[in-house]
Image 1 (cartoon, helix red, strand yellow):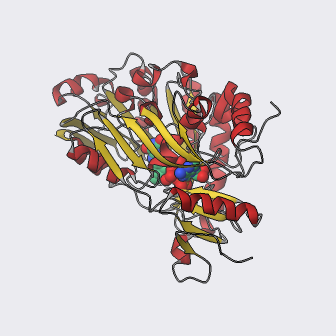
Image 2 (cartoon, rainbow, N blue to C red):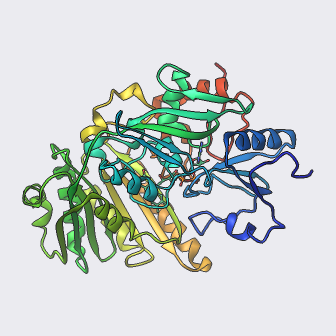
Image 3 (cartoon, rainbow, N blue to C red):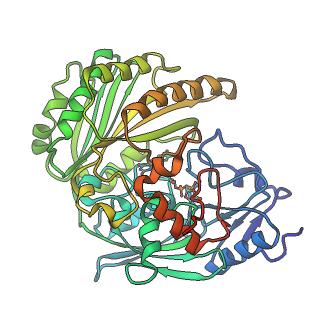
Length: 442
Ligand SMILES: Cc1cc2nc3c(=O)[nH]c(=O)nc-3n(C[C@H](O)[C@H](O)[C@H](O)COP(=O)(O)OP(=O)(O)OC[C@H]3O[C@@H](n4cnc5c(N)ncnc54)[C@H](O)[C@@H]3O)c2cc1C
């Protein structure tokens, strides 16, 4: 088997760039693909698909490489990487942006802000638009502007036969439905997206609160958080967490600080606040400040949808899990607000099945040395077992390889319909990974 037929920038194990090219964002992923092909065009993508089928090598699709479980790579697989397809075109007449598949969120936010637009993306600057939007996409603007996938109006995808498909409400509408929540790695290689831009923005209120070295604040935070979300002003979206020694929350508010303070009162009145930053700044500055917190580590993480109000006993059990955490700050249970604009779309309009949930709860542990990995993974596994028992489904962008019956966990009642879409667009299951959608008997 040779590499003839592959076009674009082809990195093989004999190439000095291979070591860097095989890395994913999660340092715990240590896979050795047969080659990585950085595509410049849709034709490069089609050639890579043809090559992998001819040589019986499974292709894996990668854009930003942030999949928690490394499903965008694999030992002995061909990685089709879209990093070099990263153009952004803004149409201010129609309030539309065209984005190529490998575009990172940082570049997208910055370009859009030059034209005065906000965007409902995620918080990590190096995540690519592809994985984010294809799994739904949550962030600090979502209660105001919806999920990332809710702004998608069109995509272009290269299918398993190398054909380029136009995907929107009129062309391949079943695939358009499937791509908005279940599209990551399952149906073909998406090469570009068209988004409707919903909001011009100037300044927003950035909110950063923390209760450090304050164990009682953790219970109080979780208790008040769930009450706070009920009837919460949709202009505010928040990501919070509890860790061994305390709690913290970051939020964006599309309004002025005075109003934000009133809305935040139930949280601000939790005793022992050690950080209280509520400032009215440029949208892009707020995005940048939040993005700065991310750095590459080895980690295990996963997240679930919360649909019911937790009892005191359930909240206490979550605190017990935190008390057993392997680290003081690098192991945590996070909460991500849903509701607001996320509930505006009709439930069945996309594959984001748990759209009506109140929030997402995730459990994460980061480590530096490989020898510690098993302790962290065991803590996440134990904590996840409990969290799973009190929650509904799993967020596909926070995947977990130990999840059983993953199709239903990620896609609920849509699992069977998605298997039919898979059969139509990828009947030979060319695009497969450990938790991919399998072609159904439709
Ligand atoms: C530090 C960090 C912060 C995060 N923050 C958020 C957040 O704020 N909000 C949120 O919703 N999520 C967040 N996530 C999760 C993130 O959305 C997912 O990991 C997402 O899938 C990453 O996309 P990617 O393109 O960077 O990753 P990749 O690993 O390249 O891809 C992810 C999945 O999508 C598939 N895929 C990639 N490109 C394509 C394509 N062009 N066509 C078809 N399939 C493709 C891959 O095969 C894989 O299954 C975060 C993740 C990390 C690690």
